[in-house]
Image (cartoon, rainbow, N blue to C red; front, side, top):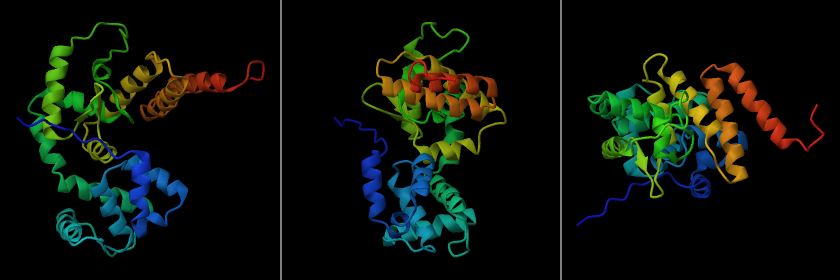
Length: 250
């Protein structure tokens, strides 16, 4: 009789509010906050780990401190050695991955190669996308998609907690999880997934202009990650044309 509720990330406003409560996060510049949002997103535990690392390994809560010490020892992460801000972000993600047993969960998901391929693909999208985006084929962008096996795979991935289905039929991988998955993907897989995701975002029809521009902006970044530089330049030019007033483009 229980109803399953899959928890998505905190909203941007909720994330900023949480960061204001942590001294190590509160004192960061706007540029560093943007990096945190993109690399970690709205995941409270990872943000708590990062705050502790920025304050020389001192967490605000005893329970967090205990887990921090445990997983820092497991991962060989020093809580007192000097490190750059970017290194602290990476270490916080490593701690969260160890805490959540990401490698072990990927091993479990990998027993079904199709599910693992869908997990890799979903992890490169920077925001929630419709489930059918995972089966997008750039060679046949209008091809009908059989949702039955796709939905079954999504349910299995949701059970692993590595992927979160949202109530509006969208799916999402937490940013810190996506960063963890990126480091263990087979060679070439990340670029291939970024290329498919970029093509999907560039081609999918949306009625909202802001969403269209967000899609196109992210497609440029994904094309660059896939090292598809000609496609990135084409998408960037399309975006420039959309931003320039008619007759003002040179």
